[in-house]
Image (cartoon, rainbow over all chains, first blue to last red; front, side):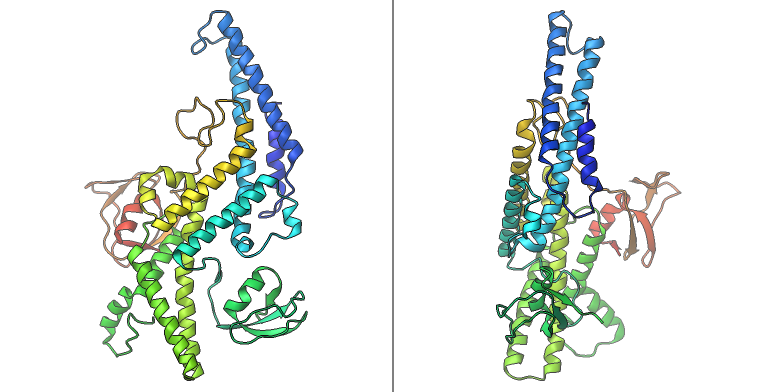
Length: 200
Length: 230
């Protein structure tokens, strides 16, 4: 009661690694929502009591008023905690949409941590970004780091087979092989974790 | 894009300085640096972005021509590098703006000054963002709360103003470089606000000054171009 569960929810979010999502805590979330409705019920019954006693609800200052005030404040606090939980998760989802969502699906491990509505949000936000990029005629999510060389050395981390399209040649990318690729081509694979850049 | 029109003629040194400082690359770099350092969103440089896009396209065509005609590969890769770096600048500028919009979407949308600073495409981007997140928050939280507590911007129906909107922190410190003399500003004791005043103890920056200041009193100066953020 009185915001303790909401506090747990927020604490759980804050205790995760920054930028990483934990699985959506459906149970705790549902319990906080129930509490909100309980507070509201109690608030309304206190107000009704005051009205039945003939007191002016806006100005009377008796024990019932303060009881109602506490319920109201707990309710708003719960609301803030819930919104904070959802909003901060949404922020992380937006970062994911920038990194991955425009071309590919989310990997399994991340998908199971999201609630249904969050998956929808992810798709919608990716769509929004895509429509901006097509309006501007530019890809805003490549070139995340300032380019130093037009060609970079990469090492392939996962087996990608022959499905890679390069602008000037085609190559077979077996695992652990090293290649000298154009930076713009390699970037999308680096972002997905399929290749890594060798900087030495 | 090294100089405005690819003109490599030798100019005297002081003309070179002025030439360099007004090329599109420099303007874009300046807009990019200011946007990165500023906590709030700055006016969109519409004409500059248009010109930059055209010039990038021109460069791309030139590079393609050179590659096909078997031009010296070293020169081609130099042009390519130049092109890449210009593209990076433009993309990063747009990216920084988009991320600021995402972070403060409600605040920007409500405030007319901020809204006027967006480009057309950014306006439709922010509308769409807001729609999407309202739908998401509505479904998960707001529709399940009691009446009077369902608003996305207010805590409850009795809040007097929109109290759930994140706003940019205008008090952060920034490093500013002065290009033209600023107006004399009288700063209060926390240096957090300023009044244009003719009192004696005013603060004024002259060209060449490099200062660490709080952002808020100097917003006007930044928008007028008197100072640049570093």
